[in-house]
Image (cartoon, rainbow, N blue to C red):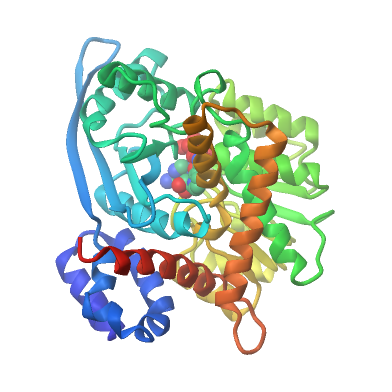
Length: 448
Ligand code: NDP
């Protein structure tokens, strides 16, 4: 297969979708060798069918703000591939949302879900609606209007949405409520639900905890312990906060957080008490990370409009947990110069291709989001399993399963990504393992 020609063709067909093309290019480059070993794949044009989503719903979402004004946003659902299970993937509410971003996320989700060992296809949805500064009632009206368009296309065995940036327990609750009203069914169609109506214990924590479990597996390949390590985190949302919580419990030091306005860097690390203050600030009060810096100028420095990477000083590990393309080539070089020897991605595609090349050239441990952050969707899969059985598992049981799934994902990466010199190329490993399962299922099901 001619990878260059394949990518050029996709670029010609989808010229205004840079994030989607970036994600496809990374995967196709790393699976090209394996793909070529199976001529039967090429005979049914499998790769093209796997890269282009099965279908996309696009709709206008009209809602009324608190002043009585009618506002319009765009809504989308990208159903990428359901070869191995019902479509599954989060919903993102952020002003930056567009079709390119959702197509890249749905594409990535397909490989990630395949890696989890559970039966879930890939999807993603969202809107350019920004929840920032909106009242609770405005959020509710928006969620209802969004689901009013979406509810026909989703279902417990069709497509199961969840949260992502800007969509947490509150938004999932409102969307689930309206879905229930429109369908007159109580089913596990959304995951990330509240504990009182079908949610799973450990789901809020799952992405962050899972990323730390994956990191521990990576560190174990080099006999390194997390205790005392200096970890730079970006973001201060769901993924960042639970990553930090688990790291602190394991004796690591947290030296940074960020949000879309700027970053804080605490050279001596953040104490448990200070972390709890940040947790409350972000979750209970929906505040800005700068507010913590204003209150604690002795603990940290605030860098407005800056990402943390160039400011963290000596650092062992980086866990980008905010958004795509938030670590560029310069950031990667700065991290490496500061001593970083492991990067485990909480966000989806946070590192640019140039940054990934730098990490791999330096032979550091580098785990792409589709492997390292798969804990979130894994526990969503466990939530679906519990809903189907009308049961609730204990926190311990879910956490143990999460640990096992992350260990299994790591094993798949090692199996498919170990190079001749022993270096584990987690990108190649994750993409190949994720791809092969979906490809085999697609072959078995014919051209559909
Ligand atoms: P949240 O909305 O809870 O938090 C997102 C954080 O990232 C916030 O601190 C936000 O700052 C910051 N952020 C968002 N957009 C930007 C931007 N353009 N530039 C700088 N900072 C930004 O989302 P999550 O924590 O759930 O998601 C974070 C990442 O993890 C995303 O890439 C998501 O796709 C990925 N992920 C999430 C999973 C989950 O279970 N939630 C599962 C797997 C992956 P601000 O508050 O200023 O917007």
